[in-house]
Figure 1 (cartoon, rainbow, N blue to C red):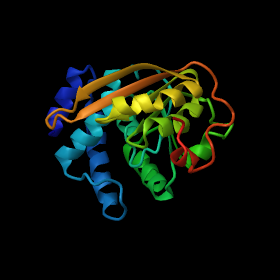
Figure 2: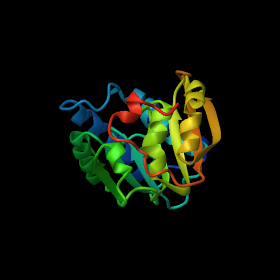
Figure 3: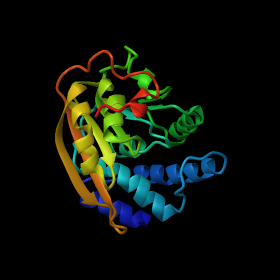
Figure 4: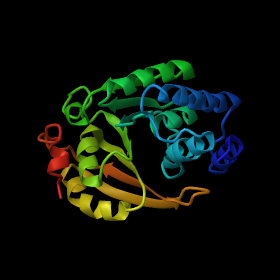
Length: 238
C-alpha cells in the first residue's frame, strides 16, 4: 500500500487526512524504522507494508466504531503504538494512554509523541494485570483497545477491568477470531461485558482476514479480576 493508496482508501472510509496528518504518518514510519535498528519493535519495516499492516490496519477500527467524540482510550500492550497512535493522528481529540510491560517501548513512545507533537497522550510501564487493579485506572476509560496481544479469554481479563461501565472494549483480531470468541464467551460475561458485534473484513491487497470485536461493559468487573501476573495465561477463564 503506497502512501497515496493509504490516503485514498482511508478517505473512502470517511477519514480525510490533512497534509500535517500525512506528514505525521511519514515521521512515524521514519522513527519506527530508525528505532527498530536498535530494539525489536516490528518485523515489518518496508514502507508499503507498514502503511498497510500497521497504519491502515490500526485505523480500520474506526470503520466500525465512531472515534469522533473526545474519549479516554487505553491501549493494552500496544508495543510500537498500534492501534492507538494511528487513531490519535486521525482523531486528535482523543486522549490516548498506553500500558506496556517493556520500558524500552515506553521510551520509544515518549520519543515518538515528541516527534509527532502529540497532546493528551500518556504512557505507563506496567503489567496489565497490575494496572487493572490500580484504582486510578480501574474502570476509568471510555474505550480499551488491544491488537494481537492474547486470545480472547485472556485479553478480556486484561482489558475489561479498565473499561468504565457503559464503556467499550475493542479487540482487533485476525483469522480464528470466531473460535476465540466462543472460548471467550464465559470470560466476557463474568467480567461484566456483552458482545455487541464481530465485524469481519479483508485487509486490502493481501486479503488477510481481520475482525473488529466490540464488547460493551454492562456492569462492574468483580474485584478479584484481573488475577496476578501470569495467571490469566496459565488458567484462562473458559
